[in-house]
Every structure is written in structure tokens, then in C-alpha cells.
Length: 447
Ligand code: GLN
Image (cartoon, rainbow, N blue to C red; front, side):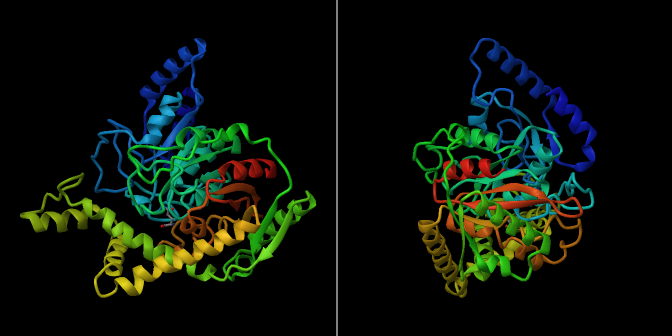
């Protein structure tokens, strides 16, 4: 803990942490040390973990990167926090993120942007940018992020670390601030696949407080890592021929395909004709869900209340206008439009149908193949400020991560070397629903 506290102080300029629980983490460490001496330590004993500031931890502040929750304190702990603490993890602090997890660059945080440790002029990715940088820069051993459309995998790729998005329903969302409830999942960001497996094993499983958390038994992921065998992988022709893909990202992917073939795995091209629809479908559905989920921030129930309000209506209007940032407002307005009586069928209902097609086609590929392989992102980390004024370009950069989110399947991003400017690249593997065990074992081998 002392080591990490020193590192956090040295790298404060990265802006990864919103709050450091220094004394508390030191006290936790002492307790865990005693447990270790008495042979009673849990599975995560000694693991120093940072949590994305979207995950409730009782009696600790939580802002979700927003002004609207600036002075809000969690009144209960999320299931994931309770589970890691029960296994003796040490929680060292709250990590910066895009406001309400909306973003792909961590530039939408009210508390300032986060810098990529590999190159301070580049974004770390988002929305779990603080979570990725904290692991990349060695400010904690591992972190928890959330992934709705790539927010664990994309920053992991930009920062050269491992990021896992579990199957929808594998991990309880209780106590995790909602962005788009039909896609949100908590996932670990780590240096090794082994740590990701260990954390998943602890946080996954049924939860009486979240009816979407599956009651499927949780395998001992960390013990299954040795299982090998030759696999069948598919890559999507449309992905590698898409215009927006950076040449070095493409070469990295082709080299990975070559390497896998040389190792005796089968790697074949398949067609996925819906690739151009994944981003529009994802954004229509998430904006609709977000506009509904964020209705609760009304200046009365939670957090910020405008001092300029004079009556009920101006309390709502002013608190929300002053409390939310631009990207969040954009999505609330678009989501409200999407769900409005006259346009519901044209946008929301249609997007639900397309989501079903995307899921079915993805599952069909995974009936024949063990995994789908793709780059995690079409480009390496881009410059701070480069895309922030162009939301459509920012959204389109999510093209490779949202398919797994819409299909509800697990996906992992693993480090795949650096480009010629020294920026990390990430390779993504997607697996079958609840196939985290196979996915982790395979990516461990690949690394
Ligand atoms: N960039 C995507 C978005 O802005 C993904 C965010 C996420 O997974 N939370 O919605």
C-alpha cells in the first residue's frame, strides 16, 4: 500500500484518482496482514484495487465524473465491492471516468481529463480511463471498470493492459450507477490474465439484489487457465477491410492471425454483414436507456441542487442544466427524442430488432467457432482534444467493441505490442455466453 501511495503521489498529474483512501487502505492492509499470518486470508489478500467512480462504496463519495453528484456519499456498497472486500482486497481509491460512463476518451469528466501514461498528450480511452491508467502506471495492482460499449476494453487497449467485459448478467450491477441497464457490466482491468480471472471469480455470481445477475455457478476461472487445446477462430472480413482502420492496427491483427495459425489453431474469415449497423444501434439504445435512467437526477433526490432555483420546475431545470455536462445533455435530449411517442417505432423499436439480428448472427458464428478475433480499436490512442468536438467520429471509434455488448457475450482485450510511436495496441477475443473460462484460458496462452 505504501508503494502504491508513493506512486500515486508521483504521478498525480495523470489525474487518474479522484480520491485516495490512504489511511483506510493502510488500516485494511494491517488487518489483511494479520489474517495472512493466521492462515485465514481470502483469495484477493494483498491485492490493491482501485474502483471506477461509478461503483458505490458505503460511506465514501461517488461522483460518476459528474458535477451533479459532487457531494454525494454512497449509503450502501455495491455487490462487487462487498465481494472483493470479503476476499480481503484493499481498496485504495476512486478512479476518474467520463461523466456517467459516457465517452471513449475520459475527456467528459467534470474533474478533468486523464492522461495516458505512455504518452501524456494522448487520451487513455474511456470511459474507464482512470481505471486503465492506474494499472498502466502501476498506481494499483488492478482496478474495476464498467463496460457498456467498450469502456473496459478500449481503455485497456489504449493503455497496454488486460480488460475483460463479462457476459451480460455474469456480474451483479447492484450499486453500480446505471448508464444503459441492458448492457452495463463491471469488469476487471489488470496486468495479467490470471489476475482478471481471479477477480472475475470473486465478483461474479447470483445476487438477490439484481434479478439480471445469472444464477449459473461460477467456475474457478483462475484454476482453469492451464487448459489448452487447438481452437477455431473467426475474424470478420468487414472489420479488417473497414476504411477507418489504422494500417499498423491492421498489420498487428494480421500478424496475430498468422501466429495463431502457426500454433496450429484454425483461423478463418467470416462475413458479418451488420458491422456498419452496430454503432447506430448501440447509440440509439444506450441514449434511450440513459435518458430514462438519468431522470432520477432532479435536484431533489440526489446531489446537486441549483442555488438559483425558485420553484419546483426551476429546481429541475436549473439543477440539471448546471449539474450535467454537454455530452450527457446531448444523450438525454437524443434519448428523449428516440423514446417520444411519434418516433419510438422508427428508432427505438427498430434498433431493438436490429440488436436481435446482430445477436443472432454473432451467436451463429460462435456456434461454429470458439472465438471471434478483432482489434479492440480501429486506431491507437488519439490526441487529447482531437475528437472532443466531433461526437460522431468519437462514436464511430467504438465500432469493434459494441458488437459484444449488443450480443451480451464476453470479450477481452489483451495487449498486442506497441505501434511505431510506442503507443499500445490491443487485440480482442469474443467468446460464447458464459464462456469466460475458455476465453481467459485462451488469451492467457496467446499472451
Ligand atoms: N464509448 C462508449 C459510449 O460512450 C462506451 C462507453 C461505455 O462502455 N461506458 O457509450
